[in-house]
Length: 254
Image (cartoon, rainbow, N blue to C red; front, side, top):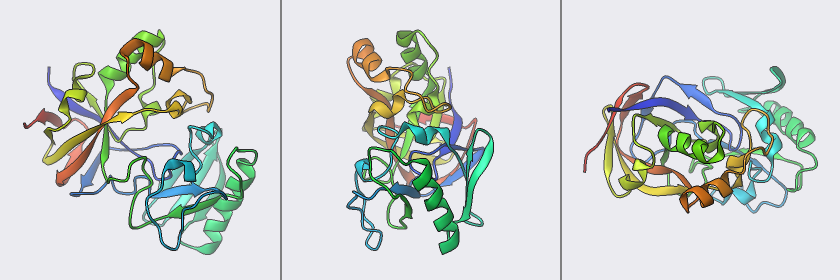
C-alpha cells in the first residue's frame, strides 16, 4: 500500500483551531508558514515580548489547562494580518493585528472570554519573528499517522478525531505506529526531504474535544494501558525545501 500525504494543517494561534491547506511551501529549518506564529500570553508568564525567546507552553494559555479555547474557531488571513475569532458559527472578535487597535480588540475579547482560567489575566496576543510557539524549541513540522489514530480508537472503543493531536501533516496508507520507526531516518514528501528526529509525547490537551471544548476522552490513559506509552506522531525538520500537496507520495529514503 502506498503512503500519501492526506491533509495539511497549520495553527496560526497556539491552542486555537487549525486551518487546512491544499498545498504549502516548506523551507529548510522552518515550521509551516504562519504555524504557531501567535500565542496568548497570561500575566504570570516570564515571556518577554521585547526580547522574544522560546518558552514552554506553561507561559501561555494552552488546551492542557484552558479547554475553553477549543470553543473558538480562529481564522487568520496573513495577507492583511487579520484575525477573526468565531464562536458557534458567528464572529465574536475581529482585528488587524498589525495595528494597535486591532490587537487591542482581540486582547479585550480574550481577556473577557477566558476570565476564570487558572492562568491569571488579562491576556495578550503576542508574536515572534525569531521562533514559533510550538511545544519544542526546534523548528519542525509534526506528522500524524492516521492509522495510529484509528488504532487508538480501537482501545477507546470510539472514533478519535486526528485534530486532537494538532499535527501539521496527516499521513494515510502507513501501518499503525510504523512512523515510530522513522526516527533517525529521512523521508521524502513530494519534492521535499525531512529528517525525522523525535516522537511526540502527549499531554492531557489531546483529551479535549476540538469541536466542543469538553474533556470527553481519557486518551492519556488509553495510550498508557493500550500501548504502554503516551506517544502519537513524530517531529521532522525540513532539510530540502519545496512544495507539498495533499495526495503527494511519502517514502522513506534511509
